[in-house]
Length: 319
Image 1: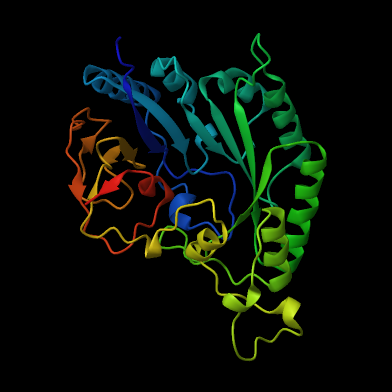
Image 2: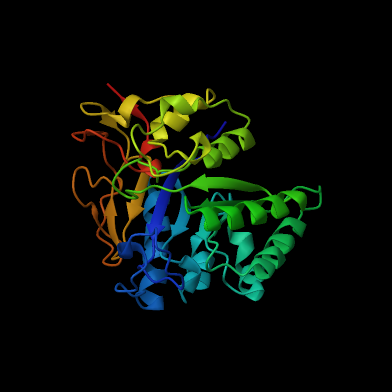
């Protein structure tokens, strides 16, 4: 029996153009300094990527991120060139694109993840988009696209309260929504903002997990009254230890391991350069805009002391 082609995951960062200006997002991801390339250049680039991988019996699964990827005027024509019948593609968006945009694009994705940002999001519009997406079913009643809403929760009391109000409303509507804690050193590590006890208590109870505040509580004068107002020094590693269903990677240190980033997955940066991962281990593999990428690679030996990016962490590692 003929074996199906292996899936190759590709995370593609389109420019850094965004219509939001969230204070907790690094400027490098939303300054709009790197514009979208010409439509033909991008459509040629994705067709080159798909053709190159299929020649080595790989099936591409794209994940489009930003910035805000729905602002890319070439995205529809790029989707039409993907030719991906397995629909293993993912879109990460702030959900601000028009309902018409989603009507035209949704069927190119198996997963659409909407990041809900309190200061910017139009709740009614997001509800209309989610209602539309959830209504799309095949003849057997299966959802055509998986939807996930990630509620971005800062540690500011007023923003936290607003986020929780919206989160509870979405839950009451039956929406697939999750709370998301934010990193204070996003793109550089796993340190969360100093969330207060009452915030973390709510967060972990919503996940169905037990949490001992003593393990992460700051010591000394915190300028907050009462234990519920104390701040906490909490990292992704702390969350993983609490969540017993997830494998714990102590410090996410794979130094000396062999890593299949660049073999089973690739990342494409704002300017079209291809890398094994966001760690840049092993250097650039070429540029899809110039169609000169080395797609066939062996596992690379990791020299980093910390695997910082969630996409990179998914690449298999071995001694």
